[in-house]
Image (tube, rainbow, N blue to C red):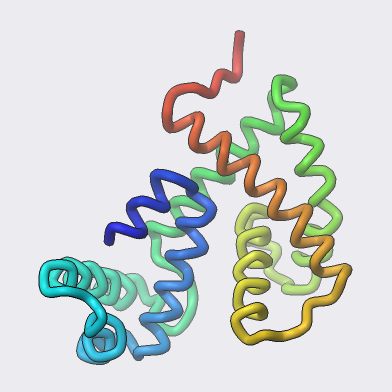
Length: 180
């Protein structure tokens, strides 16, 4: 849909969080397009409704095909994590990006702590960071209290992911140079 496309072009991190939210929205509606039509699409005008209907239907079909109706993420979203992880590795290995490395190392203790808590050692550090941001997003929606220590961790992780998203944007525009 238009919002997803705009977010993808403007900020890949916001796009990914949005798409995870859409996945959860579809799950909350039991991946039933009729429920989506009644709960979400009823707010759209006729032209937008038709486009949105097809978009949501395609996502539901993909979720079913990929076996992520109950949990997990669509491959299109996993591909974003893979791309960001690859870029992250390139940025860390280059001496041209000391501010990026500094932001990463500031966030690293929190990333390690999160990985130890959630027990999923197979997910990338980048995915761990996004899981943390999405978790905070959900806690805020539920109006739950967030500790100062958690806010400090999220601040470091957000700053790190913000830099990564900016470099991703530069890379997509052909403006990121790893060598002189």
